[in-house]
Figure (cartoon, rainbow, N blue to C red):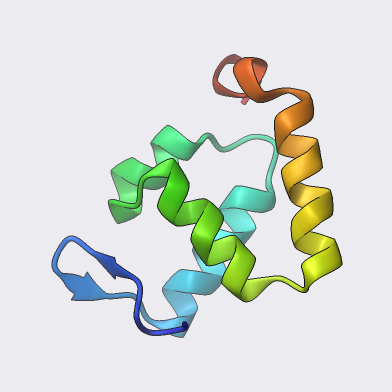
Length: 76
């Protein structure tokens, strides 16, 4: 699905996708910050992560995100 994620009326480059993945994996950057910078909503970030990461890595990331779901906005 690389290159087909649309944000702000343009396609994301591989470098932008890599940056978004790094931001999403970080415990110090919220989905809101990713949305401000790239225009992707939380669901779009999750879809991008599902398409980019290996299945096990994606599941581990989602489990970590769910474990502090409501706190994520304040924690980050």
